[in-house]
Length: 79
Image (tube, rainbow, N blue to C red; front, side, top):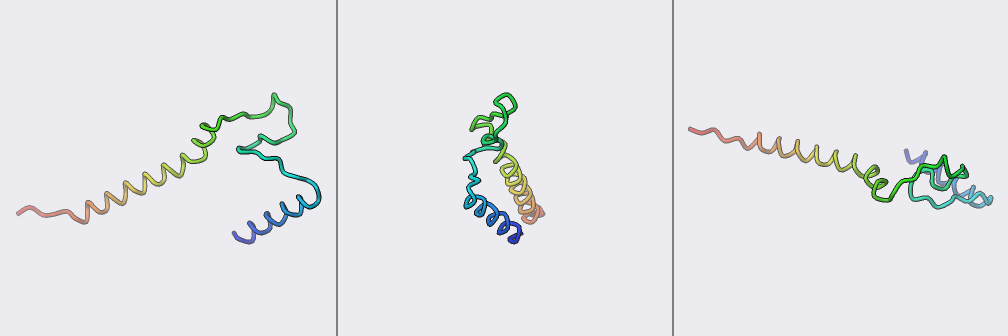
């Protein structure tokens, strides 16, 4: 994985040196040269919701399973 990251970072650096600069884009496809009708426009709120929601759901799910496991291990038997 680090080889892929290093290769892509080196490629981007060489592209910048050659003069092919990347346009700033906060979200996908906002810096492309396509016509305005074909661009996908996202608000910041929608973009952040799409970007962070899967990680949030994974953390909530793992937290649920951890609490379930803890509650099962502390099950006390009533006499």
